Length: 153
Image (cartoon, rainbow, N blue to C red; front, side, top):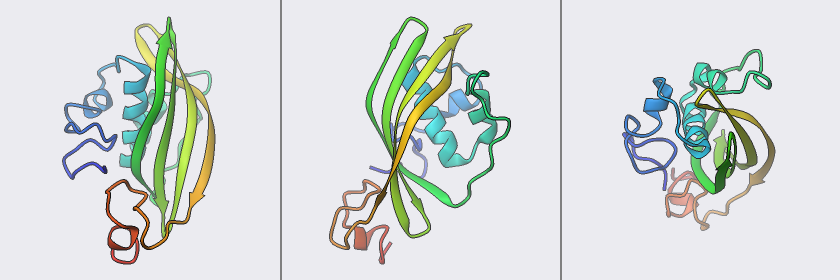
């Protein structure tokens, strides 16, 4: 289900302040999954400074451009774990660009240094979605596409 207006974009069901917002404000994420959820929320909220700060220094890009055309709709965590100072999260994120939908699936790696988790890298793949009018909406609302993000949404 997509987050409510006051819910966290990561879809946890909690408020932004109790969920990812505290990591955006500087509290260290306790697990790779918590960091990945906070990064998803940062992408949804266009918080590029947080994205760069939570990226490991060995793989961090010099700059991140803002992306006003992509609207992140739903996050699904498929698997996550950690062993020592390494962690991984396999997730799917549904997005919309204009009238087109897609799913980004990634197996991400994380590294903990000085008690703080960082995104290291990932193996992403993007699949375009072409939902039919009477199919379930890709945003996860449970409504038909035509009544949600489609022609009626």
